[in-house]
Structures are given as C-alpha cells and as structure tokens.
Amino acid sequence: QVQLVESGGGLVQPGGSLRLSCVASGFIFSMNTMGWYRQAPGKERELVATITSGANTNYADSVKGRFTISRDNAWNTVTVYLQMNSLKSDDTAVYYCNAVVHPTAWGQGTQVTVSA
Image (cartoon, rainbow, N blue to C red; front, side, top):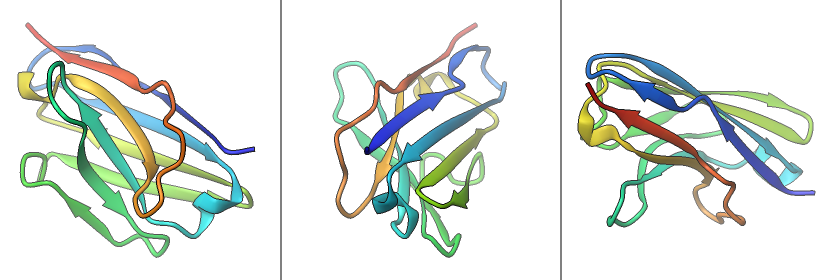
C-alpha cells in the first residue's frame, strides 16, 4: 500500500529551526528521487528540495543554505527528512513529500508557521 505521512511541523519564531519527517511506504519510493514540496496560502505548490536514491541533493534558491534534505532507505519504506534552519515568514506553508518523477496521491502534509 502506498502511503505518505508527514510530521514535525509547528509554530516557530523567525530564525528558528524545525525538522520535518516523511514516511513514504511503498516499494515505488525506494529507488525514486524524493522531494519536499510546500504550498503557501493562495500559491501554487512548489518543489523546494530533492534527494536521489544515491543521496544527491538539490534545492530551490529560496531555501539553499538553510534547508537540508536527507533520507533513510529500508525495504518498502523511505523516510525523508527536511532540516529547516534560519526560518523566515516566507517559509510559512503546508509541507508535503512525494516522489519527484511520478508523484503519487498526496499525504495530509504538515503545517509550518513562522511568526513572531
């Protein structure tokens, strides 16, 4: 069964940090490039970080140097992390993870709110 479960969001002050986790269940995720996406109110969903099965990473310019994506692979399950530092109000959004090339049905996401 394919399933995506994100967690770790919350309310944080500007300059703070959060670590998001995503458990991606299903063999299709094991060898795929995974990504963290975010969707702010009134905006399109955007891809902010990707990681290949070989742990090569890439970041959107808006988060480069502040966010770090990583993954742990197990049989039939991939856990993807997003360490977010130096958070800004513009980072406020619902964060999702999914495969990059062939995204499956989206999980519920996790809300990140950066506010004083």
